[in-house]
Length: 248
Image (tube, rainbow, N blue to C red; front, side, top):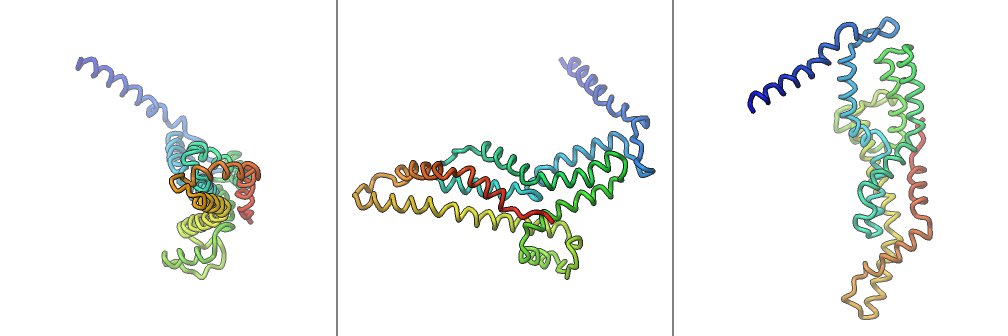
């Protein structure tokens, strides 16, 4: 049995060594316009590293945070426990995030990705060009007081003469704080009609002497009926999409 495992381990080691030997100098990518080139293995390593950072970028640089928080608060306001499920809320948030971020993604593609793929732009200029639309979108949603607060905490309190001088960690922290504040403001407005229904139902039950009957059991159908009658999902999704300022 031990010899059998040794043979399996040796075969696996040979298979793992094949890509290393395949990454020979013949697979080196030609540098665009006389720039510095990278081997295929280094490009794959950079790609895998970027994929691991994709969830963090999704939460800190896109509209995902505001949308998922508002949908979670809406579910709590309805009082439907785990309905819709977390998977459904995540799916709705992702697709609405793609809808909101589509103009920014189009600018990134036309101004950075496509010129880099065509060999008209090197990697560093392409990265800088791709960062400009994202920074413009984040600045359009960030409150000035949040920006000044984190700039003072980090010691880079300016004064800033342009948006390009703001460090990205300061911008990311300010953007996340502003997004949470906006999401809680929208959630407060969503809670108001459902809280009114809960109060009315609780008052009626108390006046009728039904102290042992849970008000949530009676108010839930009325809240669902109200939400459906006003076309709540379309209204919430449309309001969320319209709540984002256009990137300038």
